[in-house]
Length: 225
Ligand code: URA
Image 1 (spheres, rainbow, N blue to C red):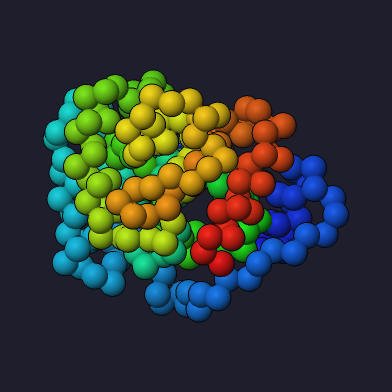
Image 2 (cartoon, helix red, strand yellow):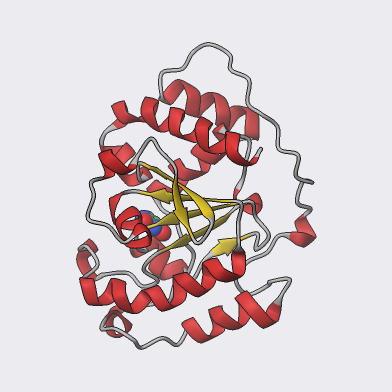
């Protein structure tokens, strides 16, 4: 696996930035390997872990019939920043972990661009189960899954939340507004600042937007670095 500097230079050249840039360094203590936390190894088993165990058996909507694994979330439960995507895809459904496919690899490079890695943040989706044939989640599925992500955010209490793409933004912010109108300014979720940016899967289809996404990431990182 490339190291952080390599990741950063790959990502910056991908988005067309060829001049050296200064990335703010995190004041967070680096996470040591033994502290790396997944949904099955959480430091507070009575809270996030208990919720993840409950969610793993969820039958609140029809996706329970077709999913392979409930994809609850992964990362540091004490993270300053939580990234929220839409719904697991096929790769995530098999592994039980969010953002492990192509979009996830781009997300890793985006994180690296602002000096972070997966173990320093928390990553989750608004919908915990993979919709069949990659279709958009249905209203009743989104509604049912709120039970999980709202409790998850209550426990996590990050300094900032970053919503990836239209579906996550509309779901968490409870709005029909377009992604374009939601980007570029701060929102609020129960007192936690929310920043909206493009979904990495969209960036894979529309690489020209990576420049804008980079600006979004720099603004985001200014909020917690
Ligand atoms: N897209 C998402 O929104 N979430 C994932 O976990 C993977 C792809």
